[in-house]
Length: 78
Figure 1 (cartoon, rainbow, N blue to C red):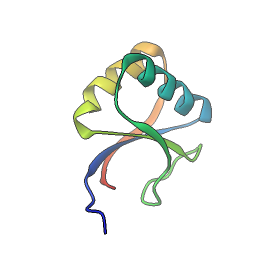
Figure 2: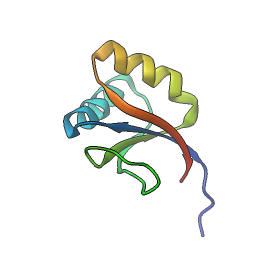
Figure 3: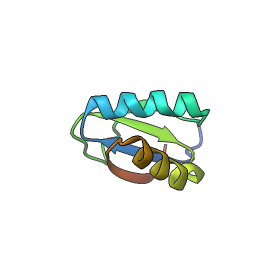
C-alpha cells in the first residue's frame, strides 16, 4: 500500500474556477492536478486542485491576483 503524504486541497464553488486554476498553474509551472473532492471535504462543484502543501501561500496569492475564487484551502494526507 502506498504511504499517504500531506497534500494541499483547494476547493471551488464552480467547475470554471477549478479549470481556471489548472490553466493558471500550468502556465506558471506550479505542481498539482485536478482531483475529485475527497469525502472529508465538501465542495459545490466536486472538483479540487491537489498540490504540495508548501505552495499554499503562493496559490492563495496567484488565485487572488487572477480573480479566481477558492471555496477553501485544506491540508490532508492523500
